[in-house]
Image 1 (cartoon, rainbow, N blue to C red):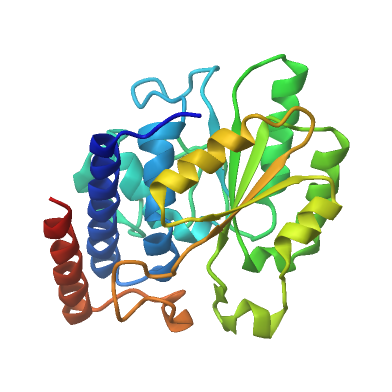
Image 2: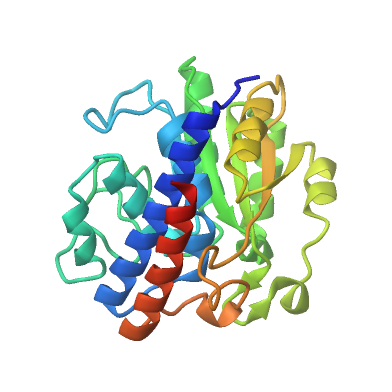
Length: 282
């Protein structure tokens, strides 16, 4: 098991906080977009781009790269911010989010930005896309891993469960799915709208490995990924419980922030809170 050093862990936490600040700055500039999900997933994206993934921002099409598929594309501000910090493109470009002719649209577009693996939009499709990539990797005898990030809400989509069955049938152990289990969707709490628990039991009954983890604990998440890599004949689901709006007190756990950006006053308040966290980390 890989051990994350205290120095590296501190660096990752600082990067996640910086990514949260960039998300707020992007959203207030755009005047539209999603706040809660991107903030909640900053720790996971930081872990991927700065520790887990085999990738090269200078050669984003390397055939040996790991593939990261974002199914719930509406949280793309966190992916854009993380990729910019990883030097896929200039940080200054983040301010073009959702603007006409920008490469950074409200859902990722594969052909627009190097390093984006798939185009997303309609929920429930990303896992099927990731499965196709994973199956191709098996057929081509490649060693790359395919990581698929999904939302809990899109597990209300039937297409998701068709994909779950397919992945188990073909024993895609090179596929690791991560659910952002934040319990919110645009209309409220998932368990009030369409109960999903227990996702662990559901996936195990579909012949997947199931791992539960605190998605805002970077060290624990990295350890969960390492555990998932050991699977010999099953795909793995990591059910990552996150706090939507993590780091900003008035956004945390409030589903009303699922699909709205902060105004200027709210953005300054959010940035102030994140700077306090940053100072504590340093």
